Length: 239
Image (tube, rainbow, N blue to C red):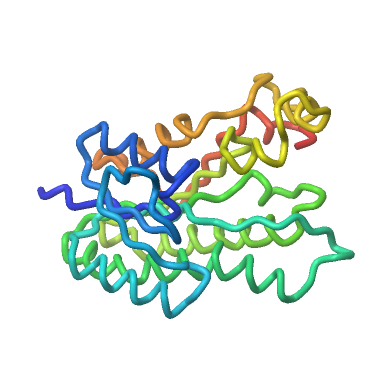
């Protein structure tokens, strides 16, 4: 069977870029999508602001017209710290647009081709914050909604040979995390101390798990959430 291509959103940096590079190293064909091109792009790339529904629709239409997309990784996401007291409707709308609406649009765009092939793999990148974390009111809510989307889509698509799963990372050493939690700071020390494995996750570790669920041999796993968090989801871990 033609392996087709894997569409990875948010592939210009961080976890998304690590996923794309990992798949390329395995001999997979990859198409990336994000607002900006990664430096020295190693794979075909479509730029689009996924926070804009119309721009997202146009970019997805271009991708499915040019490529046979049989695997999708919805990685693009947006984060703003917010508590119950200070969260605003505007922030909620922005968070849901990128963290939920864009993944839904991407799934709707690629599923017809997957159905025609009788095969598909979809992975939504969630967050351990979906289980609850102070200061993550809107982000956690959007990622929890993504879990609901994953589970329902898995049920609807199981008979078509399409699996839908969610990978939920804990703290991962990305450019964004390092900028907000610089090495040597007390905040960084507290984060690391709370992780049972005693260290931050690496983008490549998320990419490895993604590749496994994208494999053709992973057809009996669907509707699941895999927390890759160094043990933070066990018991009463604080972060």
